[in-house]
Every structure is written in C-alpha cells, then in structure tokens.
Amino acid sequence: MISEKLQKKFEKAVDFVNSYTEPLPADILLKLYAYYKIANKNFDNPGSKTPLINAFKANALIQARNISREEAMKQYIKIVDKEIKKSK
Image 1 (cartoon, rainbow, N blue to C red):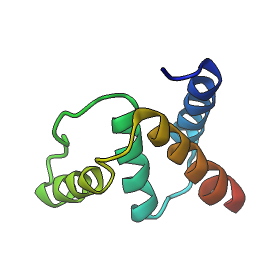
Image 2: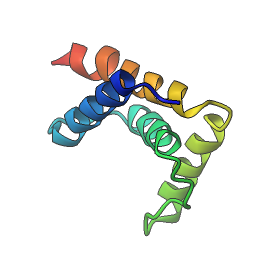
Image 3: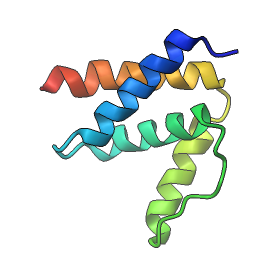
Image 4: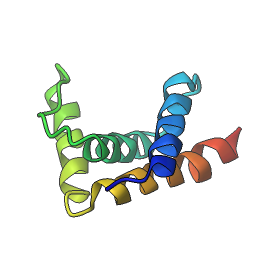
C-alpha cells in the first residue's frame, strides 16, 4: 500500500511538472511519462496522433515495466528534484 506521505509528495511533483513552463529534454519527459503511467496504474496505449511519439512512449513504458507503483512514484519525485528543480 502506498503511504499517504509518498502519495502527497508524488502529487506535488506532478503539479510542479504540470506548471513548469521551460522546455524539458525528451529523455526526461519520457521517463516522467512512464513513471506517471505506472504510478497511476494507467496501462492504456499512448494516445499521440504521431506514431513515432507513440513508439517512444511505448518504449519508455517497456523499459520501466518491472517496477512497482511505489518505486515509480519515488523515481518520478527523484527526477523532479534532481533534474528539473536543480536547473531552476
């Protein structure tokens, strides 16, 4: 079971990314995408109208497929803290 503290930290990190206005590197965005999908148990197919973008998103999900929801949340938070917030 996901702790309330972790859930709140994750939601805060998601809000930060959603309000972030600077461009982010594609590799960071793909990792965030995969961790977000896993953390939210959303395993729907990528929904881009561009097949190449769908392929990159699917690949990111495949690379992260063996981690738990909790670990996905932790990794998402870690990327936000170390890769995005540090550059501000």
